Image 1 (cartoon, rainbow, N blue to C red):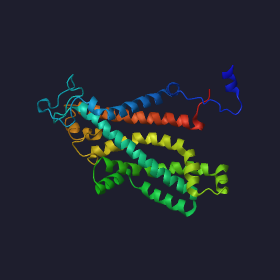
Image 2 (cartoon, rainbow, N blue to C red):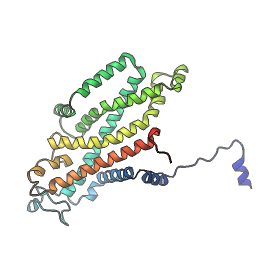
Image 3 (cartoon, helix red, strand yellow):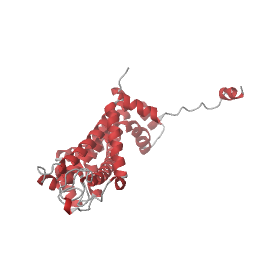
Length: 300
């Protein structure tokens, strides 16, 4: 009786209903099976990158000269390359490179795109016109030419590759953020904030940014797959991570091309993991878009 009186006592805060993470995840997988599959692939890639030393059966640079071009077996799960290095171990460590470059590039892209897009939409006028013309000039150049030019200037390496891909992805991303920010800017609560004397930074990052977060999350998730694909392309062309560090794109070039007819596993397994990574991030991004965008939510 006393507990019931305490529960019904006026002025007491109502108990907060906590969200069940497991139930929410299960509902997401049920409603969006492809998105759930993509989430599983993404989690698998991240765990493989984190626990690469525990998963790999050999050091990625260890040579087994007597077992050069060894076919897949119980000892070498994915076979060996022309230098006798274990393909499975190199793919596992290559996931660390792809995940690091992917998430790092998207983080840079989100920061630059959100800043450019919100500032351009908020101020408008000559600031918006100048920024958008610069974006037009950047987008007029082929992406591959821009990337190769940046890498030729700053040099190869994981950090430089991450910076170059992040800058490349941020420009087109800023257009999407700007469009979403323009929609938010027209709402009455922005006018109310201006009337109450809120400064520009507070309005942009306290009122506009939270309302464009769903758009940013969706685009960022899709860009993760694009960043991994770009990193693989640059490594394939020789502008990515320098050897002997393993990269899925780098494994496709060199011996993967020369010995493809004799040892097809040199190209099949790296290409398969690139495909899985891009598929997983794209499916997860599409599902998040449907969940976070109220215009695309299905009604029962």
